[in-house]
Length: 617
Image (cartoon, rainbow, N blue to C red; front, side, top):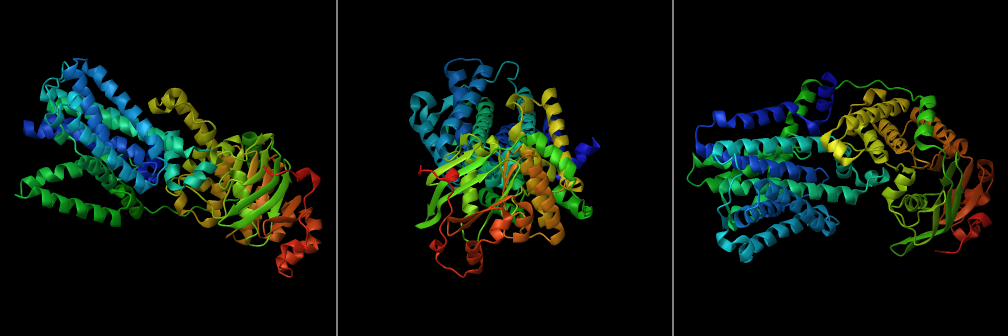
């Protein structure tokens, strides 16, 4: 229990657990403490809003933003009203149908929408809400038009206001548990990784589009579920009952409380729902005063608590009890070599054949070829602007080649998406270490382990015993890997608080956790001190000795000459030399390129041995 509490406190996004438990306790005790039926009725409306915002929080976890939750809320409400009042279907069948319909419509609408940017998506979803509002008015045979649908019955056994409250309260708890399991699951970690660093998430093997689409569909199902409970509560549903403004209110509730947190939707929904009711008692113009209070709360929270009010407890706790600085630890090269060999297995050869790449009218790569063998460190060097990083981007899929072929093992990956290359066994580090800053070091590595073996959705949403065992096994493996790279004292430390050298170690640990057979390293020594560079050299050597194919881009030539077995030199997007480190040292074309004594790249004929020459395409 104590380890669970420490882990909860270490991650501000999932804290405070106490406020979440308190909020649910108050929800369950409402019938006992409320003074009248009016307050109980408001509490039931609040419960349906809670379910909708808990679902919206699932989508916001990915960094996307929706103003159209009210559209799916209305969809669920109208479907239940149409099915029960109009066709006398059983309430439970109608409610399940509303949930399924919400998920399906969310999936269909998300297919084109989620390719848009954050704010464009917000506007498009607001359009969805407006369209649903107009359909509710105009589609009279189905919705009843402006008069709406009336006579919507409550389910048997829950006809009274008190009994129906307990149904809504139970559904809120169910929604919270499912949301909690989601946030703590592999897909929840993937969603957070996408929000933090979408490029690193793809390099780890995460299909960003698929995760966003799943979250949008699940969020839509939650909203339809909430709407399906809302219609029988009122006994009718009309266009005025669910307007587009409600979707904006749902978004404000989650942002104020804290998106991506367990308590955030509860805190934000209770505050913004209760404020108008309290203002009604003290003002004859409650609408304007409520808006002023909303604005003030949002401005203050964005300025002082940008992660939302639910994260305030974790921030205060860190101020009171600051985390002591962890002592530096040396990497365990034997463990690193063993773990890398176990996770990645035998490396694969990499063959680049006559690759071209142009951007903005500039030819960045021109017929570049390269062959890297398993277990080797193959260095790629050249002056600034030579095209080295562009070649790594072409290898990893972040910049597709215009012509040529790229083979990893026997697989042609030239047109393959970055996440598919990562799943195939291609690992990648970046010039500036990309880590998921809002997540702990342990969860950074867990994201990569999840992409290799994350289990089934049913297992982690229900948190079955098999999933819990698998989760403990992956967590233990992540801890071993972090200790092997020298981060054993930083397991629960937020990655954004790590110094540059340790961020680099964390990025390497996360990359190794994705079971690479080929590892691309883009200037791993950048920004490190001499001691850290020495450790980095030993770690790269250990990874190569485990059998992984390493392609290294680095400006520190002494480091390159010590590490590499083969070196390829490019300048102005062309290969000007290949060979062993000793051969490269004596190559006059390389010396000229680095010293700037020859400005014409054609002065030294590009090298293109027969084994890498190929026709374009």
